[in-house]
Image: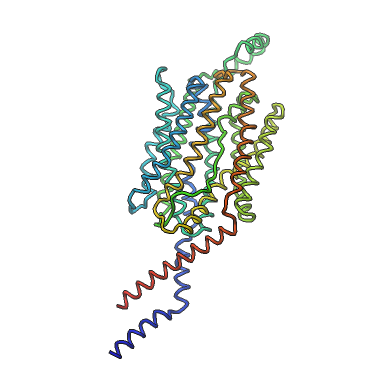
Length: 501
């Protein structure tokens, strides 16, 4: 008995007095396991490009496509835009719930949703930009395929967004991966704007002159007739084909990005959460700005280049905002980034139409756009961590959490696009018109300047109550790291006790 007791005491003592180097080695192994390589981060970031490419093309060009190419009545166009965005918003929590209930597979829980939704999403996106050979069912056609694509895109984007919490348990690694992602996503918007804008811009059908324009054309008929003889004639059919070519190129890139994401990212099991109070919000005004440039400023043949300058500027500004948020904190960065775009919103509607000035203002405004891309998604993991510290028992609902954030963002954008298009209808917008009534110009100025500024101020007042500052964020990080270390030590001790017995 004495010998047995002594052996047991010796065994327990050896477990209690493990060398300190073992703990250091275990911590080092955990750190290496959670560390992401540059290849992992780039592969993860590339997965965000499809959502931004298609979203940018739809946001900037769908409104003007429905009005001037498909030649729908502005009232029906507003219904398509509003119902499509509202449906998209509703599907987010629904898909998030289904993902949270789906079983874990050898590829993870998120990645199968991304891969399986891609082929149908690509097909439905292509058909959005196809003008059907009938008139009576056009509205149903666009509404059906727009809603179908938004649903399938949700099946891609919600699990991709939630994947942020499962590529690493280290906050620093997640922040770094988010910066990579936002850089590629802004590049995605740049690519989407360039592909859609440049291809369509080369086949932009001429506008239809109104009564006032006809008189001006008659007075200049002798000059214009000589010029028109040497210029190629671009018809509406050419424009339709250009939209289909652009959508085909974007669909090809969509598939390629999904393949890179699936092959380059390994999903890890972990904890995440249901929902929490500090939500942020977004303001999407792409379609209104495109119409404002082409109709009010008179840059019908240059608006796609103006949009390209905004996206290029945003791409270059992402590293600056990543440094800014690390140096001054995320909440301060949101205030600075959001307010930086306000002067240019006011300036672009205050000055007379000048192409050079518009390019300069657009480049400066792109800096604020970069902040809108990076900062909200960089703050979401902090909200998740904060909730996890306060509610450690809630697990397995990460997709729901991200889906509700996307829900409110998309719902707000759907409401804004629907109301703005309906406002243009009330103002008397003329499809493919060379000139628009003064009421349309006033409406567009309000939609791209006054309304966004008011909403930004309201949003920043709400953000004031956001409770997670840098001190709290760092405290949460330490607490979560201690929890993970304790769990890992408990598992190691249990394993060693089992081997001893």
